[in-house]
Image (cartoon, chains in turn yellow, purple, brown, blue):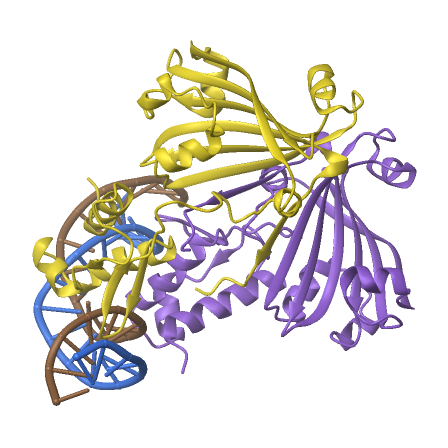
Length: 235
Length: 235
DNA sequence: TAGTGGTCTAGACCACGGG
DNA sequence: CCGTGGTCTAGACCACTAT
């Protein structure tokens, strides 16, 4: 049994995420939603408030409520990679695909990212370079059930990250940041010494509760940092 | 004019952040809060729900509501230290002050954090332990012009991070995360080998454009990670 | 000025789970 | 069992602002 406010939330989220409701489009006023769901205004309000908290909806008195989510996100993260951003501006960025294969997911890895073992995935490994210098190794898994178009995508022109952003809307992402020593392969690819510190970002992205992609991006620790600006939470 | 649910939220948040209410401690039941604030249960519920969303409170049917936030400095951030959160639950957390001194800031350091050279600061160095194992080194600068009360604070009972949270409201914070090799001092204090990977969080906090504090927290790379959940940004 | 969201009430019934 | 939170109602008044 799911609650009414949850159903309203889910319905509206789905409409926004699927693109049926475009950014800037007006959402039915609270009174209409109370009739549509046969519930009180407080219940509608609770769902809309949650959508505002997620940044998917904007509400304005006298004007109404509107879809706030941008369609293509400039950066999938609130944490921005300012190091690379700065370097890419006016400098040479390039990348190359190291490997690309359709696989079925082994149990251990499936458990790690919380999907069914044996799921069909596309596994991609890339090297990113800035000014000719290795900047990051990208190891990515794309769930083919969630992104069938990936099966025939070569990523010859567009990196998997950018391609996915345009292909699949996402509703949630989790990031884990770690400092780890470079293993032999990583050290060779990133032109560093084995055991040196690497900064690794692991990101898992969901769409409506279904995993879309899991990626680990490993940077040389001495050439990289993450930065983020926060403001106090409002309540 | 601030709303009732906002006042309740603020009051409870302050009690938790200041350490007056310790993690695991029970919060007054909703009925008591309705009497205390002379409002309806829905209003109390709204405030508590917001606190749950922020991860500061846990609610359990029949049992009550409890303070969920761990005491360590990870507060103030949307980035949560899940590694430490897990360990702190039911385990021993402690810290010790390694040094504490009032200084005038050298030009290089002043420039780095964007304040006037020669500013009077309190410099504090702490070691944080979880289960008796070193978990983090905290190197902190507190601007005495912004926080005069810090001059006489010993931090004997409360770590500087928690103390500052209760003392000074903040309006903006910037975080930078890096992976760096452990130097000799860091390696000794954190019981790791020199050169091993450390995860370092640098945080600068402002109040109305004026720097309040700058802190670098260094963790052992193999015992620590940051995690964060994001939703699509609003553009 | 009128329509919209922001907030609040004083109840109610239910689900859960600790004692 | 029964206290607790989870949810919901059918109103109400107010604040804001587009028109």
